[in-house]
Length: 110
Length: 122
Image (cartoon, rainbow over all chains, first blue to last red; front, side, top):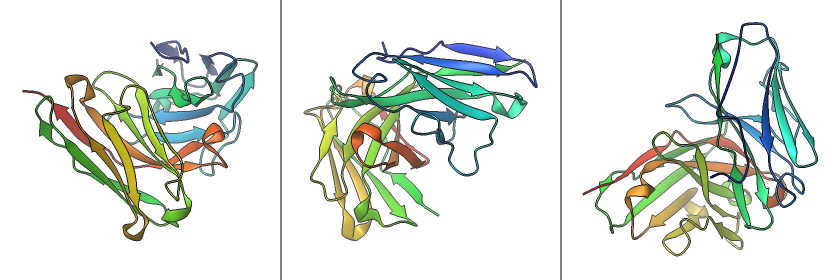
């Protein structure tokens, strides 16, 4: 059971906006910034969002991140077929003294 | 361009030991913290361990504490994970990843290596 809770799956049609949520607690999301990773099975995970809402160079502005209280969200707008992947949130947990990942959300483009 | 290449994964028996390596290039290795992250078959990502650039700060996940040891050789631009008392549930693809950010509390991982497969089975 992950410390950070993500819905196991999400879906949308091309062009749609899809939100992916990540819920935690006061010792993790409530205290530290959240990062998001995109992972295509069989490849290396890729940084998508860091410090809650910052995009690394090369990441399209269709991807955006936000945080409020003990929850964070990744939003993908203008959904494309190549966005079909697994998405993970992650942050440091002050109580566990560990970095924790969410369980991951598998995004399907219908 | 920063790059990481892992090696050392293989099939090993329960109770056995294995050492993974990760060679870095394209950045000043001794100034960057490094991590190991794994993904078991059909499961999500799991952070394993962190080591600071000077090896002064080291953290482990509870699931590996006492069995795994992270280390680095800055002269060789290399990161290691020594694994002992391996169990079936340690079977996973192991990734090394560079830590960015000012401290572990704010760190993010970029880039990641391609991963190396560790299989623990009799």
